[in-house]
Image (tube, rainbow, N blue to C red; front, side, top):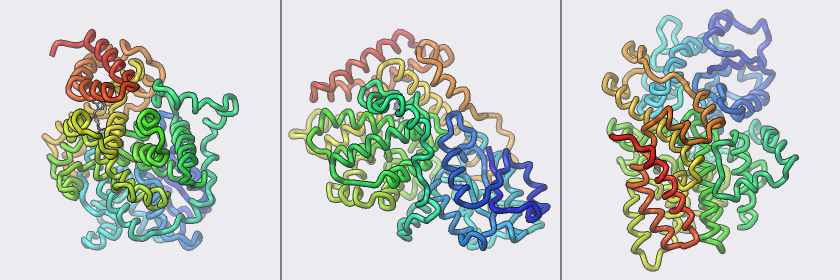
Length: 526
Ligand SMILES: Nc1ncnc2c1ncn2[C@@H]1O[C@@H]2COP(=O)(O)O[C@H]2[C@H]1O
C-alpha cells in the first residue's frame, strides 16, 4: 500500500500535478506538521497483522515545504533512513513544481514492490545509487518534465546496499537524535500490551519465562513489549542502564529495520531468538548478567535487514553486497554491521562493553552462519575446556534454530513459515531464468510476471487460527520432508550433543525427537 502525505498544505497550495497524481496512491493523508507525520508512521507500523500500512509493499511520498519546517528534504530523507530503514518513503519539496515529477514514478515503483519476488529481487541486486546525489553524479536527466521517469524512480525503494551504505554514512556523521524523534513518547504506541498488563501485571513475564513461548501469537506491539521487558530487566541486573524511552526508540528502530513482510526472518523471529537465548543463558551462564544482556541484544539484532533469502543467492548473482563482504558470511556480516551502527547510535555504552569482551556481539552474530555449523558442532564435542566464546556462540546458534525444539504445535508453525520463505527463494531463482537480477526493473520484460501476489492475510489466519499441525500439512504436504531433512542434517546431532554436555538441556533433544517422530509419520515419498 502506498501513501501520499501532504504536510501543512492548505487547499489552495495543492497544485494540479498533485491532484492529478493522487489516484496512484492507496491513501492520501493530510497532516499539520512533521511531528504528526512521525506519530502516524510509528502508529501505522505497529498496527495489528496483517498490516497493509507497513510501508514496505508500496511507495510513500511526503510532500512539504522545507522552509516552513526548518528541515531540508535531505535532512528528512536521512531521518527516514535512520529511524525507518526498511520503509519505502521519501521527502519531496512540493514548492518546486519540477520536484513533483517524482509522483509519476509511484505507479511503476508500486508495481515493483507489490510483487514479492520483484521486491526481493530489487532489495538484493539493485546496485544503482538512485539517491539524488547518486543521480547527480551520473548526470541522469531525470527531473525533467519531458522525460519519462527512469532509474530516479527507484530512489524510493529499499535496497540492501543502500541500507548498508546509509548505515555506514550515519556512523561517520555521529549525529544526535533529532528533536522530531526525541520528543516522541514511545510508550504511547503500545496500548495493546499495556492494556493486557492492566488486567494481569505479570502476563508477559509469564509467557517469556517458559519454553512454550510463542512469538507467533504476538502482535508487533507485544513483540516490542517483550523485548523491552526483558532487556530492561537485564540492563538493571547488569547495571548497564538505559532510559525507558531510549530503549523503546532502539526497539522501534530495530523493528523498522527488519522486514515485516518476510515470512520467517522478521522481528518476530528476532524476539523468538532473544527469548530462547535468555532461557538458555539461565542454565548456562547463570552468574554473568552482563554477558546475558549482550547475548540477548545480539539475538534481537542478529538478522537485522534480512532479505528472506540466503547467502547462496547473493553470491551466485554476484550482488554488490556479497562482493562487499568478499562472499564470506555475507548476510551475517551485513546484520553485524547494521546492528553495530544501531548500537553506536542508541546504546554506545553497551557496545563499548561488548568490544572489550572479544567483540562479543559481533562474534555472536557471525556464529549464526549455518556454513560454520559443523565447525561449531566439532567444538561442542571436542573443545576441552570449552572456551567462553564457544559457549556464547553455541547458545545463540541453538537459539537461532530453536524452533525445532519448541513444542510441536509451535514448531510446526515456524516450519510452515520457513517453508514459505524457501518457496519464495525458489520463485526468485526461476525468475532469474528469464531476467537478469540487476536489470532495469522497469524494462518491459520485467513487468508481466505471473508470480507472487501478497499473501500476508492468508498466512496470518493460519498463524492465529491453526494450532493443529495436521491442518498445516494438509495444504503443504511436503513440510514433513523438509523438517526431517533439517533435523537429520543439523538439529538432531547438535541438540543431542548439547544435551549430553549440559544435562539440564535434555528437554531440547527430547522435543526434537517428539517433533521428528510426528514428521516421520507424515513423510511423503520423495
Ligand atoms: N524449522 C526449520 N526448517 C528448515 N530450516 C530451518 C528451520 N529453522 C531454521 N532453519 C534454517 O536454519 C538457518 C539458520 O540461519 P538463518 O536464520 O539464516 O536461516 C535458517 C534456515 O535456513
